[in-house]
Length: 118
Image (tube, rainbow, N blue to C red; front, side, top):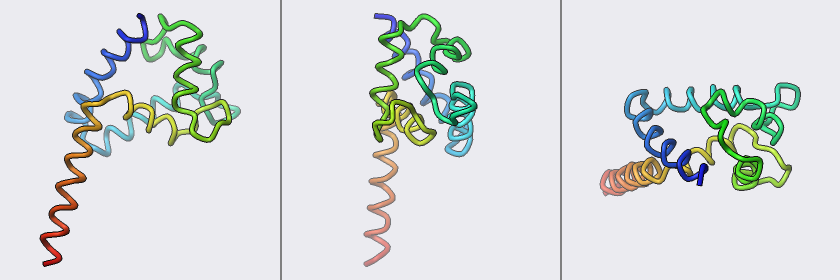
């Protein structure tokens, strides 16, 4: 239940951050979040570094199982850790509202390109 509460809070705040900071500012903030959570010797977010640093992002109430699930969900290359790209993709995936906005912007760009080509 704790992860759902945390996810809901995150889903509510990421679109607000995007609106306030703009695209570049949001990416900068995601990079800062990655840097706070990563294992500085390995350059990736491991379960251990996530557990150790989770309180910095208000995630201290998550269980070990929930933290491990975050790693597994975002780990596309199967190395058991999150690199910066995997972390950013996971953050966007956890925010459906932001993903819907991204899809809408992409569709608008594609429509504009099609119109411009005629």
